[in-house]
Length: 73
Image (cartoon, rainbow, N blue to C red; front, side):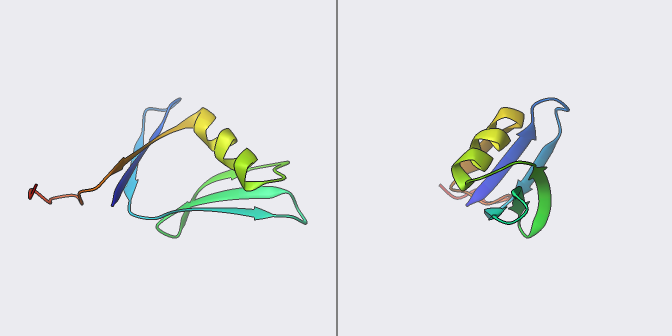
């Protein structure tokens, strides 16, 4: 699956295949990774749901069943 992420404010795009959310309960820092690369960090995050909401305020996520360059349908 191909994931395209657009930064709403900057208009930049990122592409990858795996999106991961991580919340550190001790520091209350939430992080979002795309293919293992840190793309977002939020402070005062207490749950994964809150991290996803905060992330969605700044980024648009589009998922596609096709990989880049895959022309089969």
